[in-house]
Each structure stands twice: as C-alpha cells, then as structure tokens.
Length: 87
Image (cartoon, rainbow, N blue to C red; front, side, top):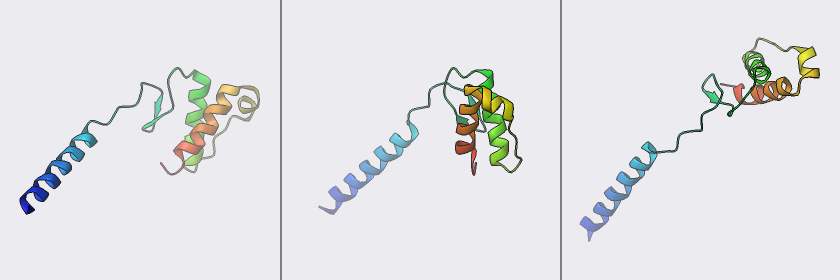
C-alpha cells in the first residue's frame, strides 16, 4: 500500500516537472528588456516602449508632441510604462 502511494507520488512529481519544461513559448514579437510586446509593431510603438521603460526605471523620457499626435507611440508608451515598471 505504501509503495503504491510513493510510486504514484513519484510519477505525479515527474509529470509535473516535465510539464514545466515544455511550457509553450510566446509568439514572436517585439521584445524589449525581456518583455514581449506583441508582433507587427511599428517604429513609433517601439520608440514609445523604449521611452516608457526608461521612465519606469527612473529616467523620465517622453516625446510629448509624438505622444499627443501619434496613437502608436502613445499605446507603446502606455504599454511600456505598465510592463516595464519594476522590471
């Protein structure tokens, strides 16, 4: 009886370890500081992410004119600020 419990526990533990090793990889996308911001991002979005991540790390960086005029930069800046905070 005890051998069966130990064997079941060992099998379960082994399966859990294997499943951790085969976790799905994220889809290809724009990576910055190890964070995947998604695929098909334009240069304005990427600049927004870079500026926002600098801001999140204590170096306020924002192109206010671009933020107000370019939706892609604005979305990148907002996403970057949220995702890079504390990274």
